[in-house]
Image (spheres, rainbow over the protein chains, first blue to last red):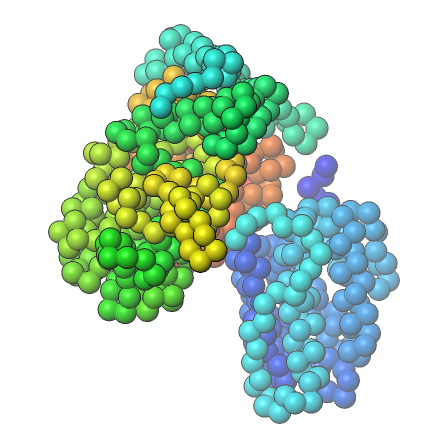
Amino acid sequence: MNLDSMYQEIILDHYRNPLHRGLRDPFDAEVHHVNPTCGDEVTLRVKVVDGVVEDVSYESEGCSISQASASVMSDLVIGKKIDDAMELEREFLALMQSRGTAEGDEEVLQDAIAFAGVSKYPARVKCALLSWMAWKDATAKAMEPAVASPAASAHASPVDIDVPEQEKP
Amino acid sequence: MTVTDPRLVGAVDAARTSAAGAATSTSAAGSIGYDVDAVRKDFPILARTVHDGLPLVYLDSAATSQKPLAVLDAERTYYEQHNANVHRGIHVLAEEATAAYEATRDTVAAFIGATDRREVTFTKNSTEALNLVAYAMSNAETTGAEAERFRIGPGDEIVVTEMEHHSNLVPWQMLARRTGATLRWIGLTDDGRLALDDLDSIITERTKVVSMVHQSNILGTVNPVERIVARAREVGALTVLDGSQSVPHLPIDVTALGVDFLAFTGHKMCAPTGVGVLWGRYELLEVMPPFLGGGEMIEVVTMEASTYAPPPHRFEAGTPMISQVVGLGAAVDYLSALGMPAIAAHEHAITTYALDALGSVPGLRIIGPPTAQDRGGAISFVLTDDSGRNIHPHDVGQLLDERGIAVRVGHHCARPVCLRFGIPATTRASFHLYTTTAEVDALVEGLHGVRRFFSR
């Protein structure tokens, strides 16, 4: 086993110099997600204009994997049509749930392909998925017609993810 | 009742012989009192390798301890020779199983200085033991006047500490919710000890129960039980002690501690998972309402109502964890043969060594008491890289695992402690009777490696 397959240089770069970090206005929805097993937290905002992800901004705290993943995710989805970004999220989720068996499509996943190695470590998969799940949740809320207030805030529990529990809270 | 099935004695004797052999041989370290290398041979898992040939360095005993062969043998012998349900058959196996189960009650009572075997109730773990007391208190509402000591309601107060494991915090939060009582707590000092200056204003005439941890699982702090118990007694409050992290590591005498209840769990003291203990003063247990209802805990049952068995059976509803209780008996015999004072001395020496060695790692900050005085072998810390940036405990734990070193990372089921110290999580190394200074050296070397990795 080679740990460098988890701690790819791309991941460490994003960890040291995260992109799109810091909460920004305007936004349509804000969510707060936590990973209770390790205390990773992210507060994330989404701004959607005409079916396109106009902006994703966040404040987060956690391990290198969760921090780098938030940076990679936001850089990938900003500017994409929501449908395309959701498709990307499904690709990334499939890669993370593959337990090291999937290679992933680098054309589609770009920098997110660097997380392929993380899927071999069940305890860390949730770290990599935290910001993706927060983005998906925030985007769904941003698309809800009932949400009139631009500062709509929600505190959602983590989306159920099919990975084994490694540590009790 | 001190009947022990003769065929079970074999495994238990083997435990005594192997542990006693280690205890009598001279240790290279001199002051330690038993030969750690000999003791380690009793724990097969400590000899295994991980990640293609790396020796295992197990520094996660506060999460769960490893098990000596004697415990594994006792469970196996029980299932191979004696398996039956307890307290209900009149055949040979049922009698043997009952004798083996009940023998552990005597063993445990003697181990913690209890004078009455009926004061020992077997539970699933510490969590269930603590919930048992908390639910008994709210159930007192529906029982007779004899349970007055346990009755609690609006205006009454429950006192815990800020360093509780969630298992000794959440049940009391829930009790407060059920009954309208108020939860209060004793805060912490910056070096991870209880802030006792305003003790008299926290524990007052309104306090019905004080529940506190003996040795913190995250800070390592050993709390001054006697001082808090003295105040609780002044105001007539019940006292509950969470001994999950102390009973496996320190000589314990419930009479000397002066508490009303003591909860602890088997799996942290070399016994199997699935078995714990609630010890309580008999005069209190005698009037304490039950928590779980079912078979075994009753006296007379009609369709309308039931009366309950006397302690301890009132609190042991349903078929218990028989093989685990047998395993717990073997574990206690193993610990007793080594001697709890010798185990405590060994762990104190390792803790002193580790605190000193960890102090040599740049960017490492201990969360908890900085010296080994009134402190056990669970050491939490946070770490920064060369530029002062925090290295998250998950990353620390992952890189240590790559070297075969097992530590725990996270908030250790004591999230309020992390909040108190303004940190998201810690890395925790924890020790037991089999931990060596070489393992501490491996940890320190590993931490230097972690810093190099993230400082590059």
